[in-house]
Length: 504
Image 1 (cartoon, rainbow, N blue to C red):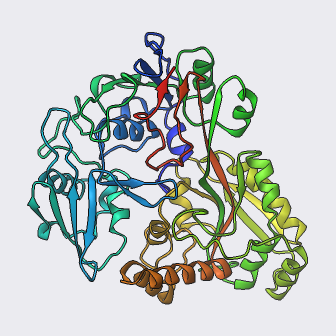
Image 2: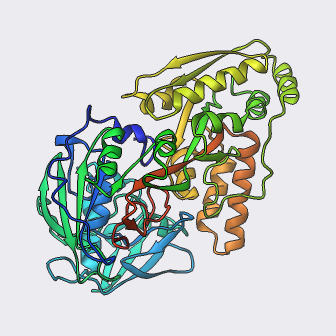
Image 3: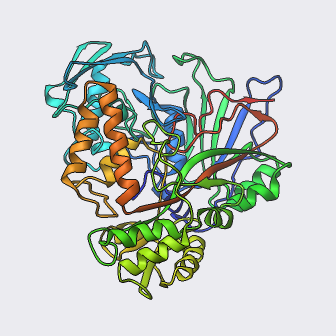
């Protein structure tokens, strides 16, 4: 998948809404503790798994979080926060890291040991397998890494890397017991333990009283499948569930007041990707013209009214390392027209590829086509196939609708903006930019690291191919009986986290 968690990737996998079978059997609690929380997610039918290293769908990721732990996870500003790792310490040149584990137990009573960590990572990086986190862990030299003792892991890296905690927090890097191969009745170290599973229908979990961070308030957690947004909302309105995942802004506005709406700002970047290696966007003046002719507020108001904010052509607004001091780019149609003339592009037809692969893409492309025309360009919208869209735009076309979920800015750069990046949609490739990245991830001095991140973002803002026009809120709805649901971006620690919530 092109980005960590795309809306299409999860809502488009199955057609129709699965019935919320048996969802009326749970009972809400009284007194703010205990009871069964029923959460409705879109699902993947027969393709769903409980193997945390294969988790790809939103409901699979949420279940993995409930059952398992990672060494680290991402906080609200998408910075790595210790989880099973109590602390981490690098050597002087960031080539060796020692990670101290918390005193934690798997659900069967066994302690979580350094050997379990190494075995989990070895499974993920197995050359014969295609686990999602394999690329994230690739810089760890596992054959030379070791268990110093039961609670200390020593990771040797293939190159200096100051951002290893981002790797420990990467999507899918869950720790399983050494030797685990059967996930029909999974055993993890998370806040809930396994009870039962009806594939394509429901998963029932129960409170883990021995969880290292404290036992959950609720007694039971049930994941239920409803692929259509309307089915999730109706189940919530009808009292069949207490949590409905992934709502559109229009649905949230319609039902606000009847249910509790939780919005997580800056969760999903909305953008257009220009390929800088080919005409017409190998022309820097034309790229700048597109930055300046964009009416960002109109795009936000049309595509995500009341549930988003404008962007400044950079990923990760509000995240760790974000260059917030770069002035916000504003609409300047006169300057845009002058740059179009300078580029010899007056009247040029711009082909904009979009798709129903993600919510709002077609609407944004329609609005943007009119903005291009207002600047004296011609615009032609091309509709890409939703099943192949993300693969297609990596190599085809010159301008395409683009989006991304939350991830560290370092990861965004590594995956999308280096000469060696495998998902480099804009085809941005500059040796001096690659060198800045290497400085950022290996600098001993934090000030040098921050200076490198700033320089990279200044360059991208001025000359890059990613036109980031907005950031969408992530929206979930809950019953008034449910409290403690944080407004957290998808992919982060507190998204779809149920061990700290309470039922009234």
